Image (cartoon, rainbow, N blue to C red; front, top):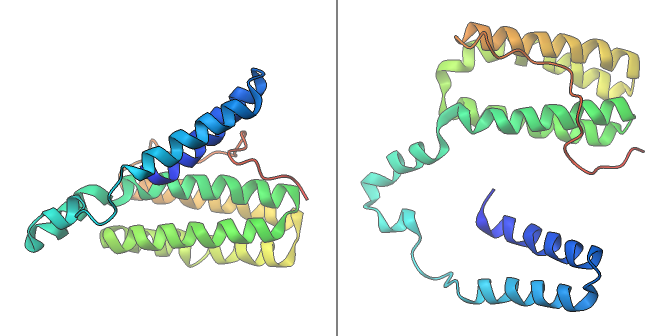
Length: 182
């Protein structure tokens, strides 16, 4: 999450807190003014950290920043959790949306770390994932629960195959996003 995407959330959080504390519109205006002020001080035409580096140093810098799979897997976990709740709630469009985003995150991670591709394809992408997508498209709750269990086992097997047997995927118990049930 970048600073630019975090700031609007902070502004909203401040406004909500102000409202709950009885500060009302004044609090909202203060938070909004701080947000606008913070962006006014940012010169978007100034070269960023990457453009300050020599062109031949940029690929290595990007690799350090993206860090292979340790930035991919938290997003995959988030998408998995949201896909799970979408299916449990019968919000099939949301489940499909999260499943597609999970695939995108995983695909980009495999692009950065192709040494994991064999395990990911054989244990996840060529069996459990497409089968789960079939259950989502069919809007079949019973089939979804069966296939999500198969997917969880495949994720755990993939982790074990890649020398991370201590990462075992469980059933989500906490909702992460404020998406309402259908």
